[in-house]
Length: 152
View 1 (cartoon, helix red, strand yellow):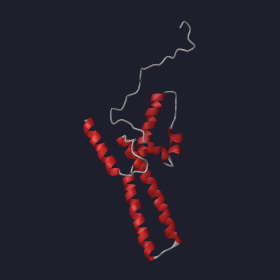
View 2 (tube, one colour; view 1 turned 60 degrees about the vertical axis):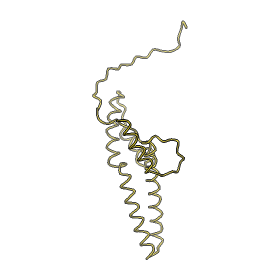
View 3 (tube, helix red, strand yellow; view 1 turned 180 degrees about the vertical axis):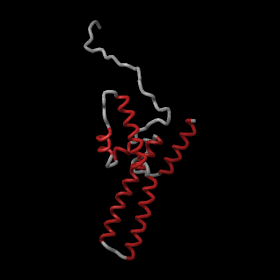
View 4 (cartoon, one colour; view 1 turned 180 degrees about the horizontal axis):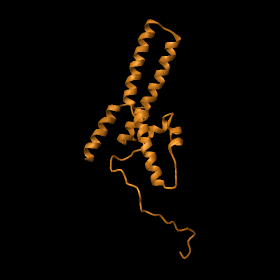
């Protein structure tokens, strides 16, 4: 070709910020399903000219958000199961519409937590071939541990 309709693009690879040498940042797909995440992104994402700095700052915010808001799926699941068990025992002795509604609300919340946990383990093990709806987290956990051993 003699003539091109493309315009040249000049990129500077001279990075002026220090890259954290700690663990790699991985975006968790379950974050997008969390009801507070979209507002969190709107509040914290700030593209102030330098994409690398903006991304680094946002990553720091997300790590804190994950630790404080999203990160306790197992604990949250155990608490919900315990609360559900207590409500069912109370319902056996004193049936009421209030307890029935509370039971349904907790079941819905537990279902949501199980979906997040399932998605987390799928992402960690990189098992895309399993059918949806399979909640065998013991399998996912063992696959993750096995993959870590081979990566060392």
